[in-house]
Length: 482
Image (cartoon, rainbow, N blue to C red; front, side):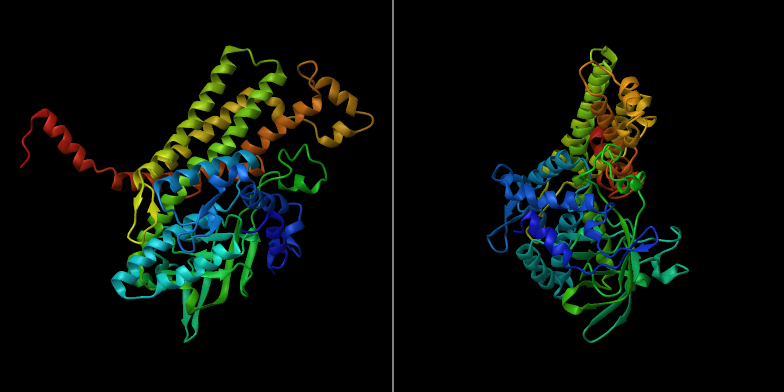
């Protein structure tokens, strides 16, 4: 396994082509806007080095018998699935941000079982190729970015009917040595902190969309791949040189548009090419794994937000108010309900044909459906407890100013004995998680990450077995079944 420092060094050896705010970035690792997101991924390596976290952060590879980082592991039991959720909660607590590595872990577990079933039915060799890649991923302890979401263009049209064919990633040429792909993947979490990209189709497809039913792996800095870094609220505060106004100076997350401009993929790295009938299964399984993930990572960040809200109440002198106590209880109740869903869908998982374990898809979708709601209420209650000062505070420069700094300290103090700076820091942290850069990995991502609320409702409808429930009601009511 890589150490945290070895991980950072490995990123410095990559040659990304990335644009941020209209400028080509020469050194993504040290760019002040990008660096906090790298620190979050770095934590997945750092904790794996610490003996007290080994049970959660590492696992025994079913391929080699060696100890590997759990983010590189194929789940071998329901215990593995539960430990995944616990690991994600831990990392959320340690970073209060998106640590970005979950999407690759969810991708490898989905691709493993689907390629196995493809080979069994069609006589292809995709699973053998995938296993070779996975062995190298484990050996090198790679961070892999799972790439599923296409720009999609007109949602009412299939990939092959779009006015611009590049709105979905597709094969534009098949050669003796590999394929050429064009298109883009949007909202790519942690793309610039990754070593490899694992591309998957984004929707279930039909025969006419066969060129778009493509899955492959590619180096994150492969020739022809360009990244356009996504804006985040308050992101330029990171350029100001201070740390209070950022809220969470050390950690963060990022998203990017990943553009493929005639990128060559050798056949050994191709994991699906035209097998459209398996695209739906791959999407469904990846989405299920990723919806399970949100019962861990969002809960960990929620733990930090709840703690920050409680501190804000302390610093405001309102901690003894009954309504504040009740709001904190409600925040904890909602947060633990999300965690319960993540654990439940894991404990109810089962083995796939390839041997790895998958979660209970119905409960995973219930988990994510709750995630589209509860973090918003947790954030609302945190903002309520924090008070309006959270969004009207003067800047850190004002606090440090030789003339007006003492004025800021005088009029923005709360409970005696608590420095005004401490109060400002905790309010900025709440602002960061609910409204600022961390909101990308908490509030808004809770709505759209791993699929929109309607996507989960569709899956709940499919998995809910309504007809069986009707039969149960008939039996109790004494209605004869034909």
